[in-house]
Length: 260
Image (cartoon, rainbow, N blue to C red; front, top):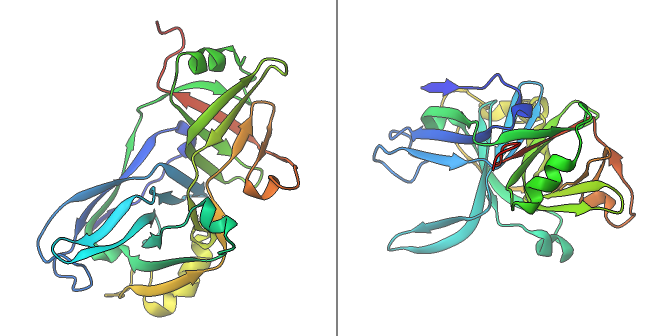
């Protein structure tokens, strides 16, 4: 089994994917043939050296010849746990559903479980450096694609693609709204997860089976609304109209400074 766990800093803004080769002898997996796969992880969280990547919930779970099952997403961690998450969106949350269903499995299901990093965007703005927002305005006007990496006051980092950028000329301010996905907040806490699941042989015990039909009650989201003046808010601050402060914000784009 080849497991390559990263020791890196997501503030570099790299895109992250996971390359996987399932263990064809594992009876808990659906295929008994050798195959290879990869997943893009658009949302990445880092606490210390623990990495958690979250896919979009666009995977169509089905059996060809057997029917459709559900639309789902995945999460993968650097501490030996991955999982499947049921479809859950903002409309679900607004409808009063406060829990998310999912399964947890061990990285030992795979003979290769390898995070891949790609520097496919360019750093164009950094809050701590005191960069002028003019470069952001230019990138917005060019229809640029953005990724935001925010360092929070507790030292944790989040890297997410931007859904919508705004330029507010009257305030000389740029705002970035990240794309939204929902996930159980527990998976960001390596110590809590590994201690809770250790009785089941996790994370890397001998032949730990999947833990199915879990109900996660602490649902979090990737959504952030980030401003270039040091403020931001998440879904929890929308109704009260309050703000939080970040430690640093770095913006990456598919457009280089001074590029024609």
